[in-house]
Picture 1 (cartoon, rainbow, N blue to C red):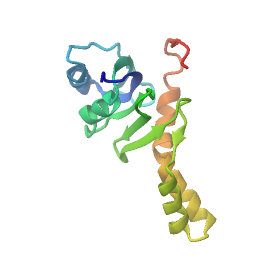
Picture 2 (cartoon, helix red, strand yellow; picture 1 turned 30 degrees about the horizontal axis):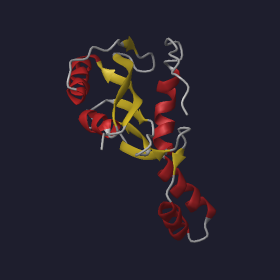
Picture 3 (tube, rainbow, N blue to C red; picture 1 turned 45 degrees about the vertical axis):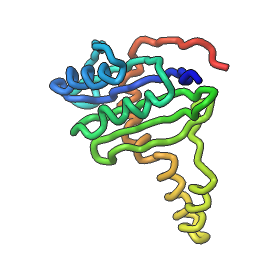
Picture 4 (cartoon, helix red, strand yellow; picture 1 turned 60 degrees about the vertical axis):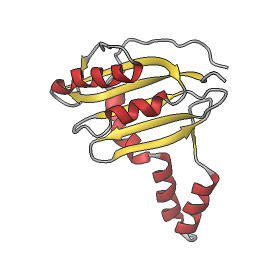
Length: 167
């Protein structure tokens, strides 16, 4: 049986200039070929750079990319992998202070929270709506989204790339 193919995007929201060639090397290693990214200054954080790279590869490539570049100091990134007929989609978010967060995604890119995780949140909350909100925010990666959002908007002047229609 052939491996399911998928596609996704890696967004490096901020990386120190000195780290940029190392990121290209690490991502290129996942794909088995050298890569060269088009870097731009990240206006939110002086001295840092940003880039995005659209990729195609076997299911599981998103996890391999996140694993290859996680853990570097001062690095903020986001990796997405579209679902395929045989695998779920996913989002990996990383910030220096929070580390990495993974969330399963559906075909529209929405985060999917598993039934067991929701039941756990309800059990921990024990009827306290604020605690339930906190637990669901953790499951959804709200803290990661909150920290990354200004960095995402900083790239709004980046060129738009239209992907083909999915589905």
